[in-house]
Length: 189
Image (cartoon, rainbow, N blue to C red; front, side, top):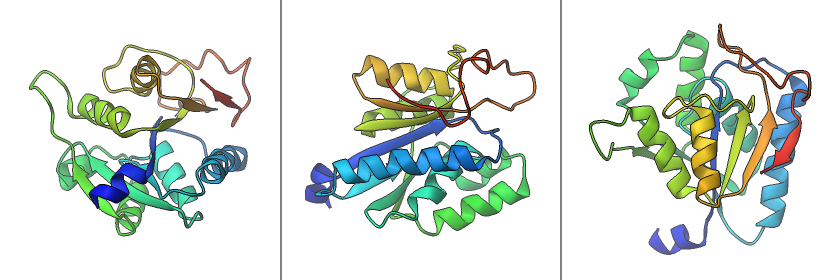
């Protein structure tokens, strides 16, 4: 496995948990994955996704259509504790179904007691990534372990980011780019 790990191309996914169901968004995610698979056709491709509600599950479901992509699931908490953070039973079921297709489950250990499990997950994702796919509204909100923080950490580390625009539908969130961006717009950062 060590030799395969060195040759594999690693995709990490981050994004909002509360996203709209949208065929354009799904198509954009598939377009990004197709570009990555085509560009790295000579290598195995591993997708690192924690299978959280929303973006993680969207990308992971789309990846199942690509034979070259194998799913790796880093978990920031024990499975039942993690699932307790999910809002819907439908997404818990989706988590379990996708988890059954995973090549590996990786417990993410916090490097210190000050970091949150989700901050540790974000750091892990960036440490594994050759590229980051972010399903995101473009807002940097200083939330440790949040999508904007993971994107910023990746950019600071020189990791390319495919940004797929998507508003955050969590109540109280402000999507300041809605007037400039369309659902599923793709930008390479």
